[in-house]
Length: 158
Image (cartoon, rainbow, N blue to C red; front, side, top):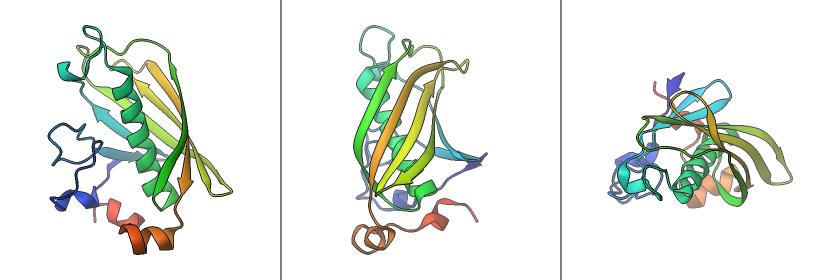
């Protein structure tokens, strides 16, 4: 498994809720590549709960959506926008049981849409939430020109 670089982190104006270190209220996610998967490890804090000691479902959705975005950037080689996501909340995610893992993979690209499978697992490896994501694909040349997509190589340490 190798850690990925966030090319946007050096830009102080970059305030992505999911992965910016500059966003005080954000998730501050970091990502790794594990063969075909993109993986994040995250420790939930008390300020992300709904019912006592339970991770808020909306936060779970944000964690899975951000991971899908990183699958797009690293595996599909461009930016994309969420078209649709389906979530299955299998079991509660407890905030006092340590690190959780979010994992996503690109299933296929078809007619301008990327399809991904994602999971959120607890510290013991039990899948607690599943998601299927569909992302509109921004053509790589447009993503580079209009949105400053840096290219796949920028996500890897030299």
